[in-house]
Length: 500
Image 1 (cartoon, rainbow, N blue to C red):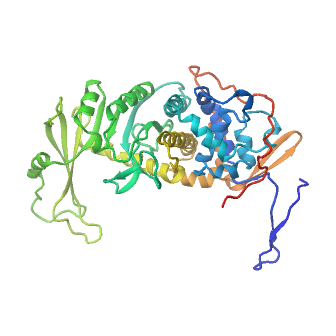
Image 2: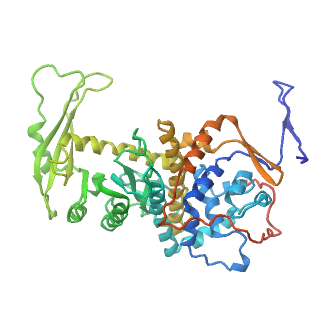
Image 3: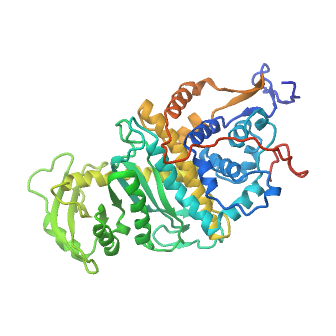
């Protein structure tokens, strides 16, 4: 390359080893190019940027909205959740090649936007119109992926399930709207999210059943709000989205959402649902006759009974709903002894028995666990840090993180569908996206040499991406376009700056 290199240190344990600093063409985030290829194929960030109102003066713009969005979303998808990470990634050659919205070899020539520039982007993305565009992007990206896969492209799936739940995001500081939540016993934000899964199973082994899964809708809420606050309007939006993606669908609800107003609205709209119902004195009395144990020695695995309790209508419900009691009487895994009393729970649903038995509904509801795994992956692998003082800026950051989760999950799901098995998103990031590589300029081309360990994964992933066909309902992506390069300002650092 001709670049100067300096010796960093010589290990004493083996004098044959020399460690040197190298040039700016070595990357540890080669997977950014896979994200860009998938993004380009489906027109994800490009279409989103067209819905964003950019208030900046056009004659003073160095980084376009699509470039700023790509840089932030790709960084989150790669597991770099802190905004300060962007100052380092701005110099990464793979990130530069993946982010710039321009063709040719010059994409390697200049650094990307700094952390302060990204912070200013959050400021103008936090307007009501732009936050709504980000929220629509969750549905639009999942919808595009679903309609672009399979033998019969642009067809809705036959059956799908929407999971709706809330979860805590811990905060440390005095962020607006953050407060102590007695249930989680922490200072949190309390967002609610909806997620789409084909046939209700995120880890299905059937080919094609994992494609199109992802977050569909989300809102950030204050920390102390009840789980069901704003649920009716939230559900209406979710149902509108689901009707465009599946021929038939149902909702799985956490116990906090099985309130009369929500269940009545879903039943009025002909939407099937199944959810847990919180215990109360009335329900406990209904369960009591079914909690006795039969005489004789219990089987080694204990008992599990599913009991139909008929129609039930609590105070405040306009409609009666089907009530199911599930009694779980299993031995302690350590002692092998049955507990003093069996455990039990209630399911409430508007599914008729002729379409789904109690046992089938219980099995279906238990698959919610794979959705809860996705929430855990979001927190661990993407983990948005909602550190802004303003509530709207924190919601903007959360929505960007969910978009990043969706695009990385698309790539992960394509790989799972081709190879089988299930990949934790953190493992996928470490094994596939965070690949090492070196960029070489030769014959007016940029060659990225990636580590051999990812060869098979990348080969499968690129083959799957090439098979995606964006339906005509969406405009084909325009792709990179030639434009004048604006030099960086004098104060811009061309080398990585370490922050104390």
